[in-house]
Image 1 (tube, one colour):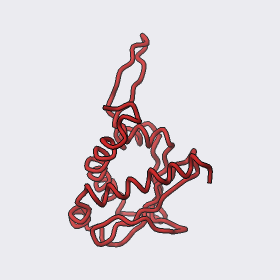
Image 2 (image 1 turned 180 degrees about the horizontal axis):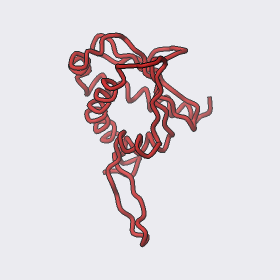
Image 3 (image 1 turned 90 degrees about the vertical axis):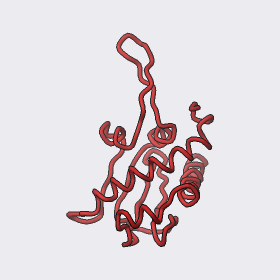
Length: 153
């Protein structure tokens, strides 16, 4: 793995630590009945780096797994924009405008893809809702720790 790939894996480990420290994972796990120990892979496509997350007993663990239940594929830039929580685009007249940037925005733009390992995965909607709440709770903490590095506040 390249030096950049190792840096990305370190960033994903930091995300796991923040999830366990700053998010009430057990509450969300109970709320969404996320008790089946499914494994979610966050794959950074342009770095060929990933981390497998498993939520169990109220905490998020990084695990080794050849076949996760679902894979979220994004680029490094998309991950950094999600951490930052905003993106700047140029209007037709060249004026830069900053917009919020969420996982839904990334998905809608085709910059975040979710694939499941089986047919008819009914838990995907719960994963989406759970992910929204985790994003809303965890990423502001990550943003506050890394914001200045990403050009944020």
